[in-house]
Image (cartoon, rainbow, N blue to C red):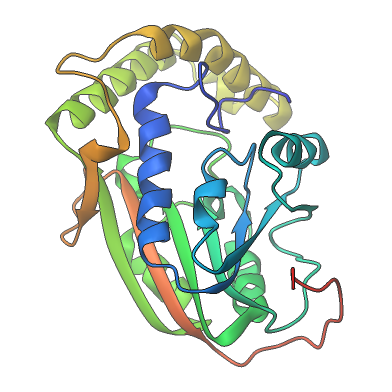
Length: 268
């Protein structure tokens, strides 16, 4: 699997980012009911597998074929290769959908949300986990960032009940993120003439991915001051400010905007 720094991978991704992703899945898992769960952008499935059990069936979806295959081989996870904005699933065929750190990658995120709404049953629930725009690092992969009100407004177009919470870390976590942000800013200051913005976008993304491949293994080996960073250091925050790391949205009661598509069935 090609390493871009976007997919959380043990040994390559800094502990704080792995823990952040794990915490998001923990909060999703705590709110799941029975039925079919679809994890969009499942990656290698390391976090997704925790969504199964308790009478639930799990389907992992990833746009990258080798990654979907790897998730199946690693965890026995049922996987599907598909675009999160064009899901080959029947209307109203699944009970819950998890979209973790995915919506920010869509140029037209409303298409992604519309598809999630379409495949959910009338009583279904979707979970969207995405960076809080003011707290995010510069990242060419993140093309659609949201503040809380913006995310609530978008989801409200497709769901009748939307709640946007924060997901944030303790002081140790915030210090680690501040350190990583400082390192990134020092590197960006080397580009005094903003040349990265003038390059073809594919070149800029390639340079960004290369820098992550070089830096992330080094950062992953460093033990943060104050102790190891695990998911236990993150918690739901009902008050969101500019420093809150992540938005955690729960969207219920999808609106009746089905397309009439007849594609693959969800797992029985």
